[in-house]
Image 1 (cartoon, rainbow, N blue to C red):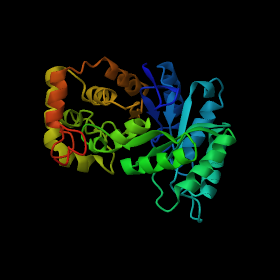
Image 2 (image 1 turned 90 degrees about the horizontal axis):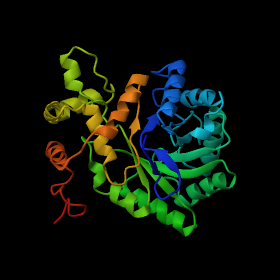
Image 3 (image 1 turned 120 degrees about the vertical axis):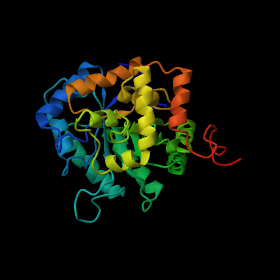
Image 4 (image 1 turned 120 degrees about the horizontal axis):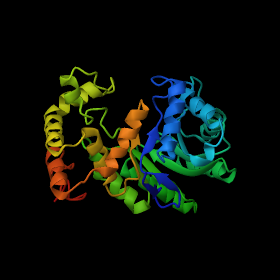
Length: 326
């Protein structure tokens, strides 16, 4: 396993992040525990979850019962999130100081731990001022209940707002941003990646295989296998990107590469990326993700990928604002 530091911190994290969104709804608790054991066996120490995964905090509870077996918590950099509503009563969602306190206490209880390593805002809250958000987080930091803070699904402007507000309070602020990023969706290259680089924020891509369409989906369909792509997005994404996916799978076949391996390797090569979130269902799929570290991304291969999946903007070969301006 390869390791890097998370953003501008000294925290060492694995360059593959174990995503746990399927724990409970799609992966049994026993299989979830086996996957987390296997992740540790491969040197993956960075686990990501959220207080809404599984419904009613089920995923956090599954992780908590795994941690309770002993010898696991100290080996795990544990990341969870807040923002989404956890009930029908007012103040059971978003980022008010009240919900920050309640959500953190509830996650700590479900996870069975005394602290969260990385506490992430699952979405920007346009209703709550940054002074209130940071004050709520500062209290958690002072109490030793959270070590680092991060964001998810923020635009570059939101990262700037958050960091400037934190700077005025002499607070560390954000150290990580979790964004949708993959070959088929490179939109964050326009402003999120430059903003994250400027502020020393590590980028953690989610959906690295674009709901499965970058994992060899067409080859699986031709073999009569059930292609895994999320019901909420996969079919529509495949319809929209089919010519690109066809070209991508043909490129992988010519190069003798597994499509999923190449998609992960490309993300790992991007400047500012800490590591993509993987969501394996089996130990075999988890082990297969490690092949991404062995992919040789030569200049010709990168150029071909840029041809199939061009950088965003009419002048995508240039950084923003030239990417969309003159």
